[in-house]
Amino acid sequence: MTTNRPPITGGGHHLDADLIIVGAGCAGLSLAARLADAHTSLRVLLIDPRTEYLDDRSWSFWRPPTHDLSRLVSTSWESWRFSDASGRSIRHSVAGLRYHYVRGADFYADALDRIAHGFGVTRLPGVRVDGLVSLDSGVRVDTDAGTLTARQVVDTRPRPAAALLYQSFAGVEIQSESPLPFETDEVGLMQSMTADAAGLGFVYTLPLTSHTALIEWTRFAAVAAPRSQLLSELDGVLAGLGLQEARVLRHEGGVLGMGLPRERSAITPGVVRAGTGGGALRAASGYGFLRMQRWAEHCAVRLLAGASAVGHPAEPPLRRGMDRLFLQAVRTHPERTADYFMALARGVAPARLVRFLNDGATLGDYANLIVALPTAPFIRELFSKPPVPSELVLPVRA
Ligand SMILES: Cc1cc2nc3c(=O)[nH]c(=O)nc-3n(C[C@H](O)[C@H](O)[C@H](O)COP(=O)(O)OP(=O)(O)OC[C@H]3O[C@@H](n4cnc5c(N)ncnc54)[C@H](O)[C@@H]3O)c2cc1C
Image: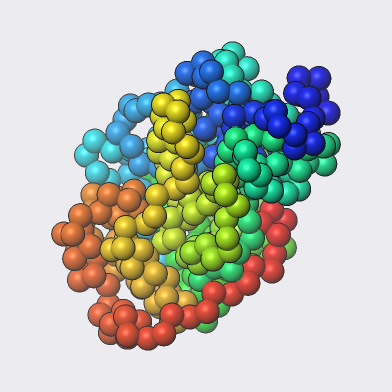
């Protein structure tokens, strides 16, 4: 246990904290850093088994050239490209918007620094939470190092759950001696799309500098792809680009559930869920970073005003319906998926598509999406029974 740990009470009358945040990843750190910035008078504990943070992931999103997270952005691009294996290719850009890239290492360092230099949040690294039990006066948090109590708990532990589709991906950040064969102001958002009965595969390329890039091979399918398969397919992608000899600086990859079922199990009173396990990821895209930032801001404002913590807002019905319809159509006709995405890229104005992906779609945007997609399969899905989500059989991080 760390030296700054408060006394273990075993669930007695005195509460160890006003708030315990379980999990110090993207969601937990985002909330904790905001509370620390505000020099909260709340006593907050942040618990995570991690003792060190690796440069294990990165987040990308659309925002204007400068914004409140600009200090974290290492690179941004003005356009993004969709293409398929048959050679069809479409470049998108939106005036006043860029696609921004935040490295995990920069995000973690910023949040940990704010927590260390702010006030009110105590980190308990190296501690795993095993269970949460509701008490009359709050919540008991059972850890592998003892028991703590708090008035309320925000639980950001990821939970494996059956999803409609899985986004499985493996990527490498590479460095090459000679300039890379990419335009430096353009992202390969979904490139060389191929679809068959198993699902969609595509390449995601982020040129970071003229000599470095993050290249990922991604699959959308009803079952999660084994990491060994993804890595061998990624090798094929790199070889196809003539980059098999490039130096690998780091790996990133995972499996994201898309279209997770709504929470059915009873939630412990005094506990709210947040982050991936609390519905942070957008069903149709797997994007969650900005949604977690919005949630953290809202939750922190409430806590600082003396109100209780909240989880992510429920998805508005139209968005939830469109996402579900799209995932169902992809699941039912995986072999057509590349055509669906190319139809969206061709038939929907870039600004509308970004608004849809950024949770800001208008009625007109939805109408445009529907018109752009092939009508027959989507009408059929509208009237068909929703497919049963398939169980995740792979660990999220292989
Ligand atoms: C490689 C990768 C790339 C991604 N790229 C993007 C992207 O570009 N854009 C985007 O929007 N989203 C992206 N995502 C999806 C999502 O934004 C991230 O997974 C994000 O980190 C999720 O945040 P989180 O807080 O829910 O989970 P995490 O960041 O995984 O944090 C969960 C924390 O809970 C801790 N924990 C686990 N078990 C316990 C326990 N028993 N007790 C206490 N703590 C525990 C873990 O140690 C971890 O620190 C990506 C995901 C991955 C894996």
